[in-house]
Length: 119
Image 1 (cartoon, rainbow, N blue to C red):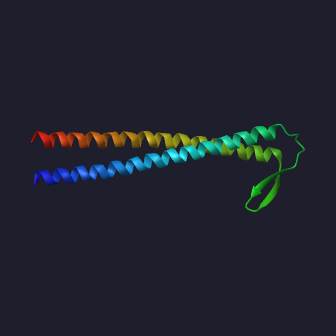
Image 2: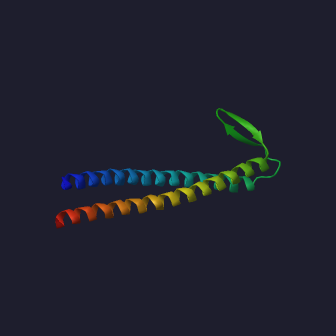
Image 3: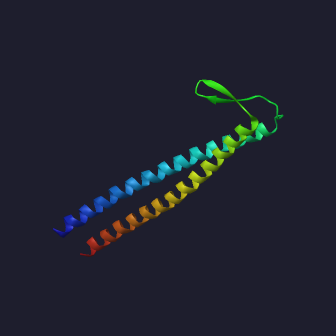
């Protein structure tokens, strides 16, 4: 009876561990995507700053382009960079928590297996 209970507990821990590892991979992918978005916004911002102030700039919206001032586009790009930076920090904190959770689950599984062998 006790052995099957331990096996069920170990199985639940393994499922939790696998789920958590998938969440860590998803967080990594989201961090990569946000980093690319941040770099793109930064490159665009540096290119726009080299243009004269009276240059006509257009923002792509769906299938059309809208005339925007240089200042508006710079503000939008700065906001994109700040938002991406905040989200990256949140995801990194979440990732640290998830990695700690995976380690705890692994330790619990090892402990259960060792206690089962000791019996």
